[in-house]
Image (cartoon, rainbow, N blue to C red; front, side, top):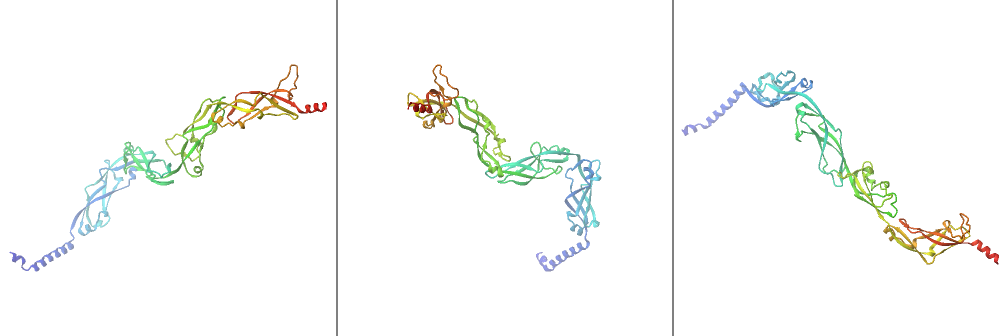
Length: 440
């Protein structure tokens, strides 16, 4: 048996090869008709305005817009065709009362040489609904952080309202339209294009081709602001009650704030000053407090950097009751002022110095130097010590014994408590000289 198989082996191999070649020649010469299945063929919808023009929308149901097609043709034709040569169309003008549209098939190549072109899916199924429009206020979401020393400012999209359109049942599920701005370490203002995302009431993203959006991307300007910390300053007007005084200490809480802005206004601002008339202390016997909102005191374009801070600043002017002390003044330092020409004065007191009580805030009293106190008696206010029956010409200096009031010139914040009267002797030097001349 083995001998039979191996006998003339070369001839036998040659015979087999010849048979194969002969078969190929016969097949190519005959070019038999065969069939082939083409899958994933999209159905093109034409004349959609036949539905949409009536204020309605349609949606393909059950995935019937992608079909499989069987083509029967000669082998050479089949080999030359691809799925891209197959065109499936559904003309919406031909829609039936059952909301189906016949699918028409044709080939863009060798259409006259194709024996048949068919599909198991003969009709396109559609769902028709009333069209609904809905306007939504654009929500803005942010992500990422700006560079250190900066804060996000105003975000301004070119439009802040968009319109969504589509089947009533689907548009009704849309509850929010949102864009997201990514700060991503930015340190200066910028403009970006943001994609609009739709959400339902449960916060789930809606991605449905049946719903159209008036603007899918929105150009958005994003402001980035510089920041710096500046102090808050305040003072007061008015006078505290008698026996009380303002120490000059004004407490602001907070004492400083961080502001944000750009440009020359931001560069020039160095503090926030509370207007003086906001803190009025007239008649005060205790600390005076007030609350001032500083937001209205900021220059245009400057804002508070801390969004959680409402701008209210607590201001307190410290008012204290006066203390008192006694100052000792040498009598020789008391001068008589406003003496007319031709008169001199002599202050009479039994001791070399005079004690006078003064009052003020303790800090002011501690700083008081006795040598800096000026003590004066105004000659125009002297009260003559006249004997019974003696007449005095009004508004004239009385040459003789007078009572004079000692007035102290004191530093601001210190006042004289006790009134002291001293004897003042006025001499008319001209009369004295004349009398001496007569005697001579």
